[in-house]
Image (cartoon, rainbow, N blue to C red; front, side, top):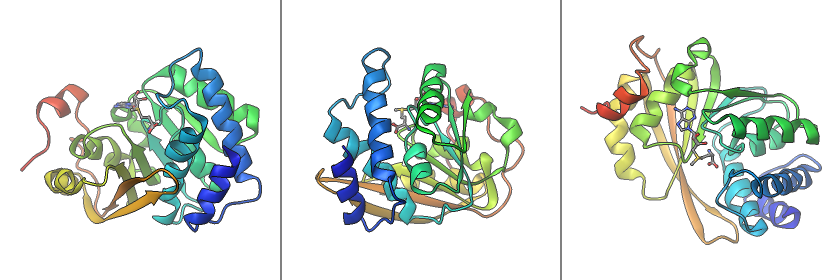
Length: 234
Ligand code: SAM
Protein backbone atom coordinates (compact mmCIF):
# COMPACT_ATOMS: atom_id res chain seq x y z
CA UNK A 1 0.00 0.00 0.00
CA UNK A 2 2.76 2.45 0.93
CA UNK A 3 4.39 2.39 -2.53
CA UNK A 4 1.07 2.84 -4.35
CA UNK A 5 0.14 5.75 -2.08
CA UNK A 6 3.58 7.38 -2.34
CA UNK A 7 3.66 7.15 -6.13
CA UNK A 8 0.01 8.12 -6.47
CA UNK A 9 0.43 11.27 -4.37
CA UNK A 10 3.41 12.26 -6.53
CA UNK A 11 1.41 11.61 -9.72
CA UNK A 12 -1.40 13.79 -8.36
CA UNK A 13 1.07 16.58 -7.58
CA UNK A 14 0.24 16.48 -3.87
CA UNK A 15 2.96 17.49 -1.44
CA UNK A 16 2.96 15.14 1.51
CA UNK A 17 4.83 15.37 4.82
CA UNK A 18 7.63 12.89 5.45
CA UNK A 19 6.19 9.50 6.39
CA UNK A 20 2.62 10.30 5.28
CA UNK A 21 2.36 7.37 2.84
CA UNK A 22 3.69 4.95 5.47
CA UNK A 23 1.19 6.26 8.02
CA UNK A 24 -1.69 5.90 5.58
CA UNK A 25 -0.58 2.35 4.77
CA UNK A 26 -0.45 1.53 8.48
CA UNK A 27 -3.97 2.92 8.92
CA UNK A 28 -5.07 0.86 5.91
CA UNK A 29 -3.60 -2.32 7.42
CA UNK A 30 -5.49 -1.68 10.65
CA UNK A 31 -8.65 -1.11 8.65
CA UNK A 32 -8.28 -4.44 6.87
CA UNK A 33 -7.48 -6.26 10.11
CA UNK A 34 -10.49 -4.73 11.87
CA UNK A 35 -12.66 -5.39 8.85
CA UNK A 36 -12.14 -9.11 9.26
CA UNK A 37 -14.10 -8.86 12.50
CA UNK A 38 -16.39 -5.84 12.01
CA UNK A 39 -17.84 -4.68 8.71
CA UNK A 40 -16.14 -1.32 8.05
CA UNK A 41 -15.44 -1.28 4.31
CA UNK A 42 -16.47 -3.22 1.21
CA UNK A 43 -12.99 -2.72 -0.28
CA UNK A 44 -10.75 -5.53 0.92
CA UNK A 45 -7.88 -5.68 -1.60
CA UNK A 46 -4.89 -3.70 -0.21
CA UNK A 47 -4.07 -2.08 -3.58
CA UNK A 48 -7.70 -1.01 -3.97
CA UNK A 49 -7.71 0.36 -0.41
CA UNK A 50 -4.61 2.40 -1.29
CA UNK A 51 -6.19 3.85 -4.42
CA UNK A 52 -9.93 4.04 -3.70
CA UNK A 53 -9.70 5.11 -0.07
CA UNK A 54 -6.40 6.96 0.36
CA UNK A 55 -5.64 8.49 -3.06
CA UNK A 56 -9.31 9.31 -3.65
CA UNK A 57 -9.50 11.09 -0.28
CA UNK A 58 -6.19 12.88 -0.92
CA UNK A 59 -7.63 14.55 -4.02
CA UNK A 60 -9.42 17.03 -1.74
CA UNK A 61 -6.18 18.77 -0.77
CA UNK A 62 -6.13 20.26 -4.26
CA UNK A 63 -9.57 21.81 -3.72
CA UNK A 64 -8.84 23.94 -0.66
CA UNK A 65 -6.07 25.02 1.66
CA UNK A 66 -6.76 22.82 4.69
CA UNK A 67 -3.80 23.99 6.77
CA UNK A 68 -4.83 25.42 10.12
CA UNK A 69 -8.52 24.88 9.35
CA UNK A 70 -11.29 23.24 11.37
CA UNK A 71 -12.52 20.46 9.08
CA UNK A 72 -15.54 18.17 9.61
CA UNK A 73 -16.07 14.88 7.78
CA UNK A 74 -19.79 14.03 7.77
CA UNK A 75 -20.62 10.30 7.55
CA UNK A 76 -16.93 9.49 7.75
CA UNK A 77 -17.39 5.74 8.22
CA UNK A 78 -13.93 4.28 8.82
CA UNK A 79 -12.38 7.75 8.42
CA UNK A 80 -12.65 8.71 4.74
CA UNK A 81 -11.85 11.22 3.47
CA UNK A 82 -11.02 12.87 6.81
CA UNK A 83 -8.15 10.79 8.19
CA UNK A 84 -5.98 10.81 5.02
CA UNK A 85 -6.49 14.59 4.87
CA UNK A 86 -5.36 14.95 8.49
CA UNK A 87 -2.27 12.87 7.73
CA UNK A 88 -1.47 15.09 4.74
CA UNK A 89 -2.15 18.34 6.60
CA UNK A 90 -1.15 17.70 10.24
CA UNK A 91 -2.00 21.24 11.33
CA UNK A 92 -5.70 20.95 10.51
CA UNK A 93 -8.19 20.04 13.25
CA UNK A 94 -10.39 17.15 12.14
CA UNK A 95 -13.81 16.21 13.46
CA UNK A 96 -15.27 12.99 12.09
CA UNK A 97 -18.96 12.21 12.54
CA UNK A 98 -20.90 9.04 11.94
CA UNK A 99 -24.17 7.60 13.17
CA UNK A 100 -22.57 4.14 13.60
CA UNK A 101 -20.65 3.89 16.88
CA UNK A 102 -18.36 1.00 15.91
CA UNK A 103 -17.00 3.07 13.00
CA UNK A 104 -16.16 5.96 15.30
CA UNK A 105 -14.59 3.48 17.75
CA UNK A 106 -12.35 2.22 14.95
CA UNK A 107 -11.24 5.71 13.90
CA UNK A 108 -10.57 6.74 17.52
CA UNK A 109 -8.57 3.61 18.31
CA UNK A 110 -6.61 3.54 15.04
CA UNK A 111 -5.67 7.23 15.30
CA UNK A 112 -4.59 6.81 18.94
CA UNK A 113 -2.52 3.71 18.14
CA UNK A 114 -0.77 5.40 15.20
CA UNK A 115 -0.24 8.77 16.93
CA UNK A 116 -2.52 10.66 14.55
CA UNK A 117 -3.53 13.59 16.78
CA UNK A 118 -6.03 16.40 16.35
CA UNK A 119 -8.91 14.07 15.54
CA UNK A 120 -12.26 14.31 17.38
CA UNK A 121 -14.71 11.43 16.81
CA UNK A 122 -18.41 12.15 17.24
CA UNK A 123 -20.93 9.35 17.25
CA UNK A 124 -24.30 10.67 16.18
CA UNK A 125 -26.40 12.01 13.37
CA UNK A 126 -25.01 15.09 11.64
CA UNK A 127 -28.42 16.78 11.58
CA UNK A 128 -28.60 16.53 15.38
CA UNK A 129 -25.17 18.11 16.03
CA UNK A 130 -26.72 21.52 16.77
CA UNK A 131 -23.84 22.56 19.06
CA UNK A 132 -21.54 22.53 16.02
CA UNK A 133 -23.71 24.80 13.89
CA UNK A 134 -21.56 27.00 11.60
CA UNK A 135 -18.40 25.95 13.44
CA UNK A 136 -16.31 24.43 10.64
CA UNK A 137 -14.21 26.18 8.00
CA UNK A 138 -14.54 23.21 5.69
CA UNK A 139 -17.04 20.33 5.69
CA UNK A 140 -16.24 17.29 3.54
CA UNK A 141 -18.28 14.18 2.78
CA UNK A 142 -18.05 11.10 0.56
CA UNK A 143 -20.66 8.49 -0.35
CA UNK A 144 -23.26 9.52 2.22
CA UNK A 145 -26.33 10.85 0.39
CA UNK A 146 -27.70 12.56 -2.67
CA UNK A 147 -26.39 16.14 -2.87
CA UNK A 148 -29.79 17.69 -2.07
CA UNK A 149 -29.98 15.82 1.24
CA UNK A 150 -26.23 16.03 1.86
CA UNK A 151 -26.34 19.81 1.57
CA UNK A 152 -28.89 19.90 4.39
CA UNK A 153 -26.59 17.77 6.57
CA UNK A 154 -23.40 19.69 5.78
CA UNK A 155 -24.15 23.37 5.05
CA UNK A 156 -25.62 24.08 8.53
CA UNK A 157 -22.27 22.96 10.01
CA UNK A 158 -20.22 25.17 7.64
CA UNK A 159 -19.13 28.68 8.68
CA UNK A 160 -20.14 31.61 6.50
CA UNK A 161 -17.12 32.15 4.25
CA UNK A 162 -16.30 28.43 4.48
CA UNK A 163 -16.53 25.59 2.02
CA UNK A 164 -18.50 22.34 1.70
CA UNK A 165 -16.79 19.72 -0.51
CA UNK A 166 -18.93 16.78 -1.67
CA UNK A 167 -17.13 13.85 -3.29
CA UNK A 168 -19.21 12.42 -6.11
CA UNK A 169 -19.11 10.32 -9.26
CA UNK A 170 -17.99 11.96 -12.51
CA UNK A 171 -21.53 12.36 -13.87
CA UNK A 172 -22.83 14.44 -10.99
CA UNK A 173 -23.81 17.45 -13.12
CA UNK A 174 -27.52 16.59 -13.04
CA UNK A 175 -27.39 15.81 -9.32
CA UNK A 176 -25.72 19.20 -8.71
CA UNK A 177 -28.27 21.01 -10.88
CA UNK A 178 -31.12 19.31 -8.99
CA UNK A 179 -29.52 20.29 -5.68
CA UNK A 180 -29.00 23.93 -6.64
CA UNK A 181 -32.28 25.06 -5.06
CA UNK A 182 -31.41 23.33 -1.78
CA UNK A 183 -27.84 24.66 -1.79
CA UNK A 184 -29.11 28.24 -2.20
CA UNK A 185 -31.90 27.81 0.38
CA UNK A 186 -29.28 26.58 2.88
CA UNK A 187 -26.96 29.58 2.34
CA UNK A 188 -24.61 28.08 -0.24
CA UNK A 189 -23.51 28.67 -3.81
CA UNK A 190 -21.97 26.02 -6.06
CA UNK A 191 -18.48 27.29 -6.94
CA UNK A 192 -17.34 24.52 -9.26
CA UNK A 193 -17.39 20.84 -10.09
CA UNK A 194 -13.88 19.50 -10.50
CA UNK A 195 -13.14 16.07 -11.94
CA UNK A 196 -9.98 14.12 -11.13
CA UNK A 197 -8.42 10.75 -11.96
CA UNK A 198 -7.19 8.29 -9.36
CA UNK A 199 -3.74 7.09 -10.50
CA UNK A 200 -3.65 3.41 -11.42
CA UNK A 201 -7.36 2.88 -10.90
CA UNK A 202 -8.89 3.94 -14.22
CA UNK A 203 -11.46 5.81 -12.17
CA UNK A 204 -12.61 9.41 -12.49
CA UNK A 205 -14.38 11.07 -9.59
CA UNK A 206 -15.59 14.61 -8.97
CA UNK A 207 -15.79 17.14 -6.18
CA UNK A 208 -18.66 19.59 -5.93
CA UNK A 209 -17.34 22.69 -4.15
CA UNK A 210 -20.00 24.80 -2.44
CA UNK A 211 -19.23 28.16 -0.85
CA UNK A 212 -21.19 29.15 2.24
CA UNK A 213 -22.22 32.70 1.42
CA UNK A 214 -24.87 33.44 4.08
CA UNK A 215 -26.14 31.86 7.32
CA UNK A 216 -28.37 28.79 7.05
CA UNK A 217 -31.97 29.70 8.00
CA UNK A 218 -32.83 28.37 11.48
CA UNK A 219 -35.45 25.87 10.26
CA UNK A 220 -32.65 23.75 8.73
CA UNK A 221 -31.57 21.02 9.10
CA UNK A 222 -34.93 19.30 9.46
CA UNK A 223 -35.38 15.83 10.90
CA UNK A 224 -33.96 13.11 8.65
CA UNK A 225 -37.39 11.65 7.86
CA UNK A 226 -38.53 15.10 6.70
CA UNK A 227 -35.46 15.55 4.50
CA UNK A 228 -36.18 12.20 2.85
CA UNK A 229 -39.90 12.80 2.50
CA UNK A 230 -39.74 16.40 1.31
CA UNK A 231 -36.41 17.06 -0.45
CA UNK A 232 -35.61 20.76 -0.77
CA UNK A 233 -36.46 21.23 -4.43
CA UNK A 234 -37.84 24.30 -6.20
N1 SAM B 1 -17.46 8.45 4.00
C1 SAM B 1 -17.07 7.07 4.16
C2 SAM B 1 -16.39 6.54 2.93
O1 SAM B 1 -16.48 7.18 1.87
O2 SAM B 1 -15.75 5.48 3.01
C3 SAM B 1 -18.27 6.19 4.54
C4 SAM B 1 -19.32 6.08 3.49
S1 SAM B 1 -20.66 5.03 3.97
C5 SAM B 1 -21.28 4.50 2.45
C6 SAM B 1 -21.87 6.22 4.55
C7 SAM B 1 -21.70 6.57 6.02
O3 SAM B 1 -22.52 7.69 6.33
C8 SAM B 1 -22.12 5.42 6.92
O4 SAM B 1 -21.05 5.11 7.79
C9 SAM B 1 -23.33 5.98 7.69
O5 SAM B 1 -23.39 5.51 8.99
C10 SAM B 1 -23.06 7.49 7.62
N2 SAM B 1 -24.26 8.34 7.72
C11 SAM B 1 -25.36 8.31 6.90
N3 SAM B 1 -26.23 9.28 7.28
C12 SAM B 1 -25.68 9.94 8.33
C13 SAM B 1 -26.10 11.04 9.15
N4 SAM B 1 -27.27 11.63 8.96
N5 SAM B 1 -25.27 11.46 10.13
C14 SAM B 1 -24.09 10.83 10.34
N6 SAM B 1 -23.63 9.78 9.61
C15 SAM B 1 -24.42 9.34 8.62
